[in-house]
Image 1 (cartoon, rainbow, N blue to C red):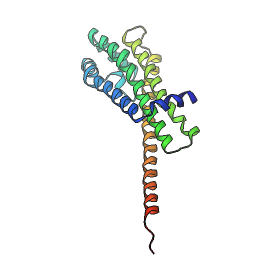
Image 2: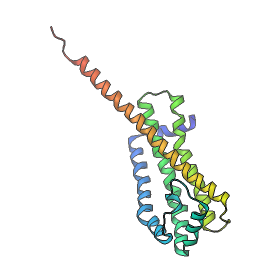
Image 3: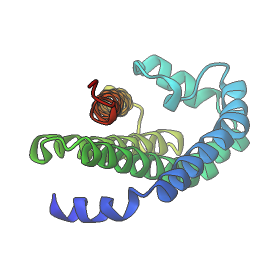
Image 4: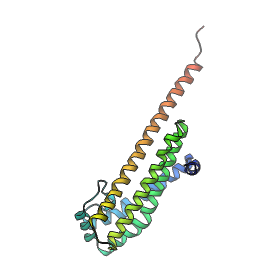
Length: 197
């Protein structure tokens, strides 16, 4: 945990937060306007990554069978092996760094709050695990069985849940920071207000 805190201490400056936010959302934008529309159009449905509640074996088989060679190649690269390699890391870096900064400025209990710093990186690991499963199915390196689909689907759901928890935690700490800022301002105004003679 101390290694993570030392790392986040370097990445939680306003400048670094702005860079990681812009970089992560730029990659997301490329996926949303370039790769996913092509893939979704070919399969006639949403890609694996865009199904937050998971998918069944029949849905997985349908997605893979509807992919032609160009769309399968596009899904494998740049979608899964470049864009979806960069995006989870950049997003995890942004979320964890922002949370670290909020925890620090709100002077929250570090030991308890530090647990939340790991969550964005757990979401990243889930995303990478999902990608591996999807690559195995799309490349037909493995038979699309109930086991691989349940595994892949679980990682898809898990990354969404963990990312949502991260955003909610940030919202909670941001609200706390805003409240403390208002209380500090009111206290300062009270102290500087001239006393009546």
